[in-house]
Length: 382
Ligand SMILES: [Fe+2]
Image 1 (cartoon, rainbow, N blue to C red):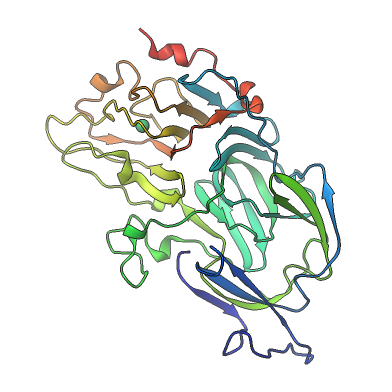
Image 2 (image 1 turned 90 degrees about the vertical axis):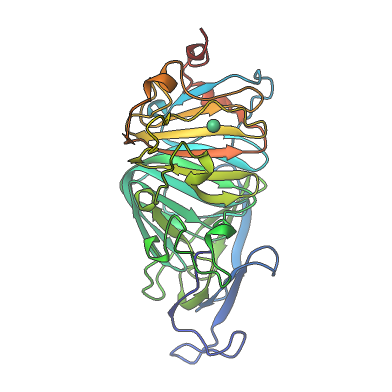
């Protein structure tokens, strides 16, 4: 999705005879998106990737918890969910037809030894704290705090937690992409895009390796356990444009205007029904009479999630790291009372946050209820 990579050994032409060192035929795995119309990668396995010894439903999976939506919650209520109260594992907090947002708190033994593959969507992690490694057929992907990590739909992986992890996970049902306006006609990232090809952390490939003997696949919000005949990581080489990556949020290049620019300048990634934006430390607007704080806005189509990472957020008072706010479409929203006026004259901001605008209305989950700041909505009333 970023660009094409080629690692390890691949034949000169796809779909031709290709043998391992012992003369045995290797097996292709073509991982395709949007049917066969979209981006794809081709991997070469020692063993048949499609052969399982068993395939059976299981009740749960340590890599995911399912959202229990509260359908009767009153709409138009502003919400603040306190991530510091999140329990261990994954906690789904907000859900729509397009995405599920979850908080996660993971230790070295949280996930067990099995692998995971999400058949329902792309998984975009934002790492608030900690350090880890995703083992995948494409190689090992290392990541740390302040990284986004994308695990594409259908990629088998095992997560090794090296330092306890906390953060936000977005399951994007329609898949994530780089906005097309960031690319030139041949697909290269433009020089005025907010990031470059060099900013992305890529899988480190070292050849075939043992993998998990059980893989739990999530599909239609149900879990199926596979026991593959051979290691899912028995890959001798691959090429293509689908691969997991990490992107450090602090590599996002912000834009500053004469006056306040709309939130779209923070666009980092896009998905059907959602836009993912990065608010990073930056110089604010340069006009002597500029109001640096976001203007109140009636964005009639979008619910807005903000995940606060650190710094003093210009527009919101009393929100701390790991908090998630939800501001629903249908009523105007904007800065907390007093913040708009108070921002005049400031020349920089140290805020770091992830914002997600969604077109489908978000529903609160039962799991989120336990994290809710009960008087946040009232903090907007006079
Ligand atoms: Fe907004």
